[in-house]
Length: 498
Ligand SMILES: Cc1cc2nc3c(=O)[nH]c(=O)nc-3n(C[C@H](O)[C@H](O)[C@H](O)COP(=O)(O)OP(=O)(O)OC[C@H]3O[C@@H](n4cnc5c(N)ncnc54)[C@H](O)[C@@H]3O)c2cc1C
Image (cartoon, rainbow, N blue to C red; front, side):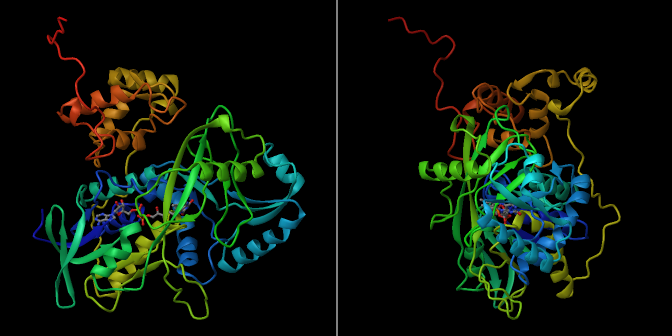
């Protein structure tokens, strides 16, 4: 631990971790604090996972700017950081003649925003490209720069690369308040003690409003969480070719049906405002809405195809767009505020925040330079985060060679997804280690198939306990307060004689 860090980042979502990774290029001491037991487990793990082309964002907004700068960076990043990414393109699908004019409006906005590679596709062409699409499709907007990724995988890869390059990450460490001297921020008070720094970066997602208020910045800024519920479909029942949006409404991009990098189809999200920033429960009405929205695009989808549900919360803010003449009140905030010194304020990062995260990181670097920081590159900075073996994606010959090196890769723990003990152990000892069942699940994708963990849970609990040197009773599902096991049911030698 340092006496004074150059930079403390509050929040280990995709924005905080990507910022840490980009800043790790420079001679800076950096600490990232995350209040949960794992990085990336909040909004960055529960979203639609799309890299947006940029035709949706309001022209002139910070959202549009960040989206357009970031979109082309994803191919290079996926090669450097070795996360799953597919530049598959995306479609906005008009069903019936009434919806067709909306495609022209989107096309025009995309053109104004600087999106390249867009084209209008006829209904007949769309039916040929996606045989499962609603036969009443009248046309579609295709954007070839659209893509999909594993958003938790992105966050983890960025965090690991940051750690490889010297960044410290402390999980289970909640920001409580700032250490301040008049208008200068000197660090943070946290649940793990005080940490001093020259700069603090607010990347606290749904709680970014509370963090900036503690700094005395933007007292009127408020995040109103907007829940999005999803259905995940069985791979065996429905396999889509690409990403299919309906024509958007004023409130949201609508319920889409999309392929994922893991091979499942997902449907969603809904868009419902709520006050609670922690409530990610799914509801019967939400599920109905998602199902009927999905069926509008892909009529063959049936309720029995659903294997899981989840929800994410958009950190929807009320920040006005700074660009002159743009009437828009839900923009991203990425700024050095005037009120305090030593503070970079990031807030209201709803969609397209995942897409924009590398551009947000670059903007933070620009802001630091603008504030007089002489950022010097480290000669030994390593941009590559190596991939770890994934048994399910290997050929038989590759599997055989790996098992000869380490027999644990020959023991399949999750039968639906083909995840081995070797992969689980590797995640527990990785640069940003998995310490709970859900942390292993997010990293390996075990427990996400038809049986939803029925076969692997006890085995994973046992492996976590063995590798971490803990009792199985100490292993949790998702950190403190969520034990996997309640109590022993039988103790050796403890006979009931009655
Ligand atoms: C339904 C839905 C669909 C979406 N779809 C897309 C999409 O397809 N494409 C796209 O580009 N974007 C999408 N987004 C937006 C995207 O997911 C978010 O913009 C992005 O994940 C935000 O990342 P973040 O790091 O700001 O927030 P988070 O991932 O929430 O990370 C913030 C972190 O800060 C931590 N934290 C909070 N308070 C404290 C504290 N006091 N101390 C320490 N740590 C703290 C939290 O625990 C959390 O880990 C979607 C969002 C939702 C909800």
